[in-house]
Amino acid sequence: MRWSNGRVVDAPFPDWLRQIGIAIAALRSAGARRIVVAGQRMGGRLAAIIYGVQHPDVAGVIAIAPASAPGTLARFPEITESIAKAHQMIAAGQGGQRTTCAEINAGSTISVAGTPTVCLSFVEPGGLADFPQQLPALRVPIIWIAGTPDRTQQRAAAMDATIPANPSHSFVQVIAAHPQTPAAGASAAVDWLKTLPVQQQACQRLVLRCNNPDSRGRRRAGSKKAMSPNRRQTIESFLCPGGFRHFRSFCPRPRPPIWQPPCTFPILPSGTKLTATRPRPGR
Image 1 (tube, rainbow, N blue to C red):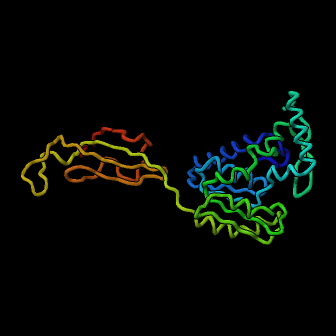
Image 2: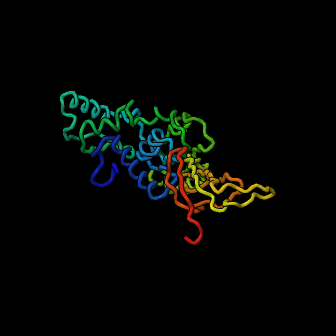
Image 3: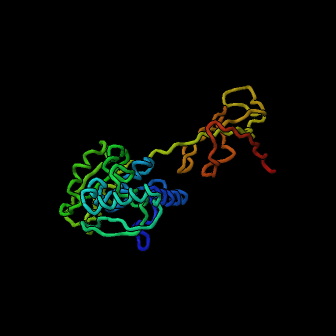
């Protein structure tokens, strides 16, 4: 990820979000159904909050001391000069040329290597990474954990107040400096995870039609009329991403269907009809 050893600002912000999406897709393909995105500082504002805004299918967001907003960073003269320099290089057709950019880390200005285009994607006010402007669009459950002595969280309560009301929205303050906030807020995050609502998954409707092998010449209970040997049985089932959910059988006398749960059905479009014949006993 960005800011890991050897990477820092080697890719623009949208690529960072796509990398998170790839990791989530791998988890879902392995069977995970409820994904919560968590991050600290830049991971909190960029990965957790903004990814949650763009992907409302995640189960929730854990934002640990999210910082620093581009609008706030622009108050530092070094950041303002770096932004102006990046715009000049892009205007001159040098947006992909390696240079140095100013960043703020724990309240101190540092210099990192990157291209003007990449640097601007993270620090330009009003850009995609300006998370305070996107907070009103956040619809997924969120817990915001802020340390009271943390200078980066001085406006945390005011920004958190711009998030739309949600029963699973929580704002937690802990007595911890920025580096210690994850440990101090761990128990609160675990308790919050337990309160998340179970997500309802869309189901597919599957209709199976099969011969009823037990209907040949047999009489219905309480009837003198024999059932037709060509009587067909209709089986309607609903398949959900988490597995087999509902099963209903429609026939004069419900019999065991061709396939009984637990089974593996393909996920087919709603209304798909399959026709099959159950082998006669002894065949």
